[in-house]
Length: 91
Image 1 (cartoon, helix red, strand yellow):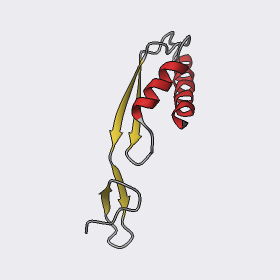
Image 2 (cartoon, rainbow, N blue to C red):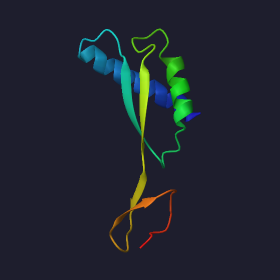
Image 3 (spheres, helix red, strand yellow):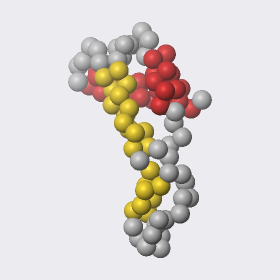
Image 4 (cartoon, rainbow, N blue to C red):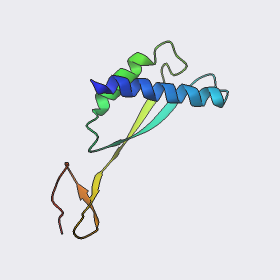
């Protein structure tokens, strides 16, 4: 489950930023997840809740924004939406 290591990394970055800004508590963290990233959003939330216990981020909200997949077609040179890796260009 790579979501656990992602959650740990997110927590480290959030805590580093909070310390730099002299914050005592982290209330909300915003994360973008690409459609093609193979990250399960609910699993990431679950893991983040586990790793943030007894930290300055305990009880914080992990806000996830889902980003659509896109690719540059080497033939028509357009950026096109895709649902999975190696999808065909619609043009």
